[in-house]
Image (cartoon, rainbow, N blue to C red; front, side, top):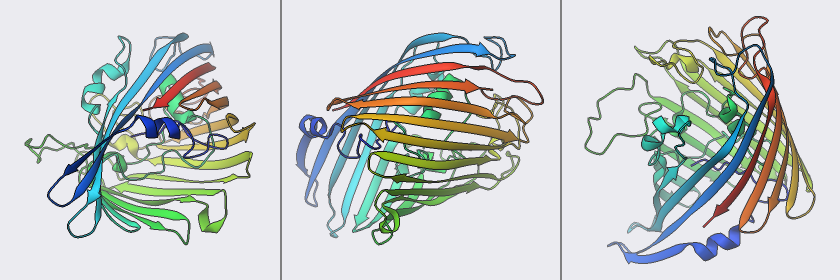
Length: 390
């Protein structure tokens, strides 16, 4: 479950729409043979308006890698169901799942992917003993894909929809796959550390009675890392570090690795930060239709650097500046060998209580990059977003 509305500065964690969530959730008490449990039903809804204007580049609109000037609405709605209680051995437990609907407009690439992706969001069983959580499921364990920079809305998420190949889900997609892991809070250091193992990378789990020996052509992978808030006792210091790896198999070209790290600091009204995502060998997970690097085989290494700053005008209004650069080496197709994709954005966020508004206005150059002296698309994009929880 991707928490795409990032809460920084004036949009302080825990305060955004908290009142409406508490009032709108439905609770049901039931006996389960071991004691009482609490079931919570909630959800969230986001509506967006996006516009793209192409201003330059050598690729014609509508060609491979080329973009069109366009505009339109997007939507995402999600239903979350969770259950919490106590086991007969004294441990706490939590379990739940989410149903996510991303929209299936006639021109949307989600047409081919939404059906299988509806039920692979935040599926989990957690066994909890104090600061230690044992977990099994899909898309639930902590990860570092939001990075450490302050921003009103994740610029990488937005620009991927425009046509950028930058991504925060780097490496073997370990934390997005079905697997088992452990999360350990360490209050003395102000961090939560975790380790996770996926038997088949990128596999979100077969139906219960399906043939589990079927293969995706991927090997097992693992991910280790930590997120820190007020790290080492320093108020306002945010840190993040994650590493994942999948060994090559008989159908992949090489080992696949991903590493993310970053640091941010909140001075009160002003917050700043830097993070870096390195995606190595991702193209090795190749299929007949290619992969997220845009080619049927590749040994590419992609590096994204992001810089962010926000300013809290008051308790409701936040302004932000974000810059992102991406370089790719070793690629054979349309990723940016020798050319840097650059994105600069101005952001605004306003908290209306039960509803949050954000606006992002970006200028991009060399979108998706290209080899040699070729320069790809440049232009401007804007996105207006309304988000609520219930």
